[in-house]
Length: 128
Image 1 (tube, one colour):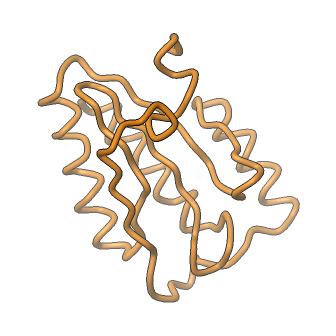
Image 2 (image 1 turned 180 degrees about the horizontal axis):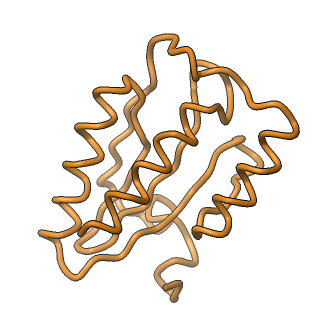
Image 3 (image 1 turned 45 degrees about the vertical axis):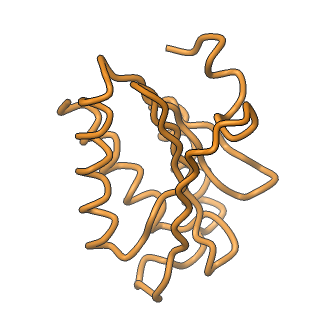
């Protein structure tokens, strides 16, 4: 659900709970997408509620949960997977809202690794 709260990312609203973890390493899936792969992936991600951040070559989505405990549980599941993948999201959390931006800093934009993590994030959100 997109409401007034979703109009701006939390950081632009003065929220100081930024957690930025840079991606490190060179996983096999950390290369740029071909134009054909990118077009298909973007369609699939947009259908799931993700937005493109063209200025950063990134994807973004805000998730809303019933309460803080659900949001934190979701973030914990994502954090464990991110560690396994050695690929970490940029995220902001206030109460039941979690905003996530995915991009591969070490490759300067969106990669298959971001898509893989986005798919995991969708599954984690659906299981809450």
